Length: 476
Ligand code: 6PG
Image: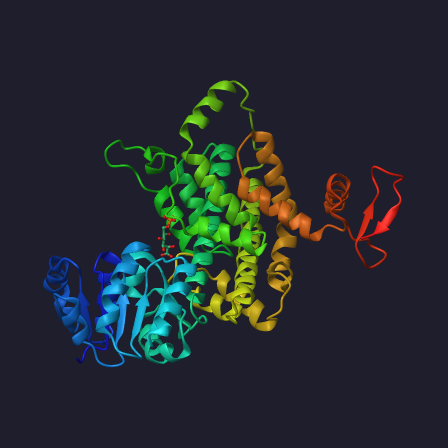
């Protein structure tokens, strides 16, 4: 075989990745369970590069040079296991299977271990950037062995997005590290989107502005500290008019947010690791809440007439407060996400470079933003940074935005506008900076009803108070 890499699974993501590889000069073997898709790819895009179309998996594998590198781009879960089971008997020791789907990192760890025992490399790889990214340059997050990266690195680094001459691809770490980092990326993506949505909701209610007017505000924000792909497309979506009704597009879309599950995985895993990713959790729950149409209708009916009235006095100052609240809350979301990656890296022994992770999110992916360059710098300057919140640039931004952030959360509560992500991010910040937390009382209660013991501020050891007895203290 002479193809340098193969792609099986030619739905839009697989097809676009294959085209990206071919456009960059790699010889790409392509395969799809139903061969029509393969034929269509060749008919429509065959001239873009050197493809080797194949109808059977056996022909596909035979078309590859050794060590073989096979990208699977099929649905996460059972379809991924099915294609792996079919591939394994056709491969030889040292060959590489690359799963570029949104797999759960625990599945990736299981598959990597099973394939390693058979002498094969299994490389769970996060790919972000949607259809356009896959075609023109995604952010790529490969896990798996160092050895597999020797073959894959030069290929992936060439087809990835490039920022300041650096590819948005790097070896994240062994086994499931790549899919883990992609999972947290998606969690941050949920938080980022929820924060933008809350900002929009507040501005819309407070200013009584049209979506088209709000699009202008987001466009302006996109030239400052908030510059990012998601802010850019927010302006695009808000500025869009529905063709069939002539109404603002955002007003004809059903207000129930869906999810394919990566945000939920992030929150589930953070609970296991004990990392408070409250912004991401609120964003995930906000989507769930929006889908509970029956509860929403019943509550709206029961409380009709209780909507507060709201007047924004100084419109310019209000817009600036919301902008600063958005930036500060976004900093919290990223601080939490990077804490999560650090904890996962420790728990699963991955040795993930946080600055490096920020580096490859600067371009190609959904959360790409100028901001990521500052995160890179923060973790490169101080790899053991206790929290992103205290890195100089971020601490300055929070300090500068703090009074506006508080005003926005307070105003939202007065006005009855839900801001779960803004409010929880501010609470997270206030909790981290507090001198004393009421956790002391929680410990007292636990000791009272269950003799769960507590530690003291003035002495080492664990203690219990004899609550039902003479209330003397005993060392536990
Ligand atoms: C990306 C995206 C992508 C994800 C969508 C939809 O990085 O390109 O994260 O992988 O599938 O964002 O996710 P939800 O359906 O869960 O919103």
